[in-house]
Image (cartoon, rainbow, N blue to C red; front, side, top):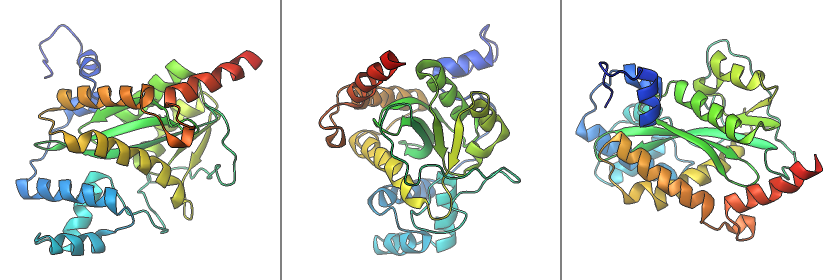
Length: 276
């Protein structure tokens, strides 16, 4: 896909393809067909039973005839970037020595667009291999403000998504993530700090707030990803892009009184802008 001899810079080619620049230099390690099959099944089990950890998943897989140890399941979960949703310390591995930001959303009424944005990453299976999807979401309206796909879990594609969301929609008051290394890197924090955005991070005891984003991932996977068998990254990106256009612009949400995220976001944002 990337042509080093092209007159276009590597950075520009990566943007055209919709992948992070860091992905261009990544040399993938081959994954066995058996592990890919396991990872695809683990992903579906995680969507169905988000509270299941490696021990329970190993038992469920054994019931289905998979011969795999708990430690290998845990290794694959780490590679996929997924974790069980239950109260426990150190739910995500932060950057060593990173600043721990407080969780700002507890008991906070979220009542308008651009008050709180959230970001997370999920695993996306393909016919052969997998990619990661990162999305910036407006907490109140459920609207996906920006997104990127990548073949690595480096911070680059998360930073690019945040920069696009800020350029297109202004800045939120609060930006919430977990304590994953992508979100605690100095480069990622700087993007938010430069805009004087309050940074909120899930911590011990705040696990329930991940459920909101997990609900979005569940919707995307059951209505789009699991119905496809993407053959390559550009195909996956194009198909996910079409679905997110439908999700934002046409899919009604019961939690929004039947409105679409676009309707809720822009209709509620307009009076706020007029009042300002």
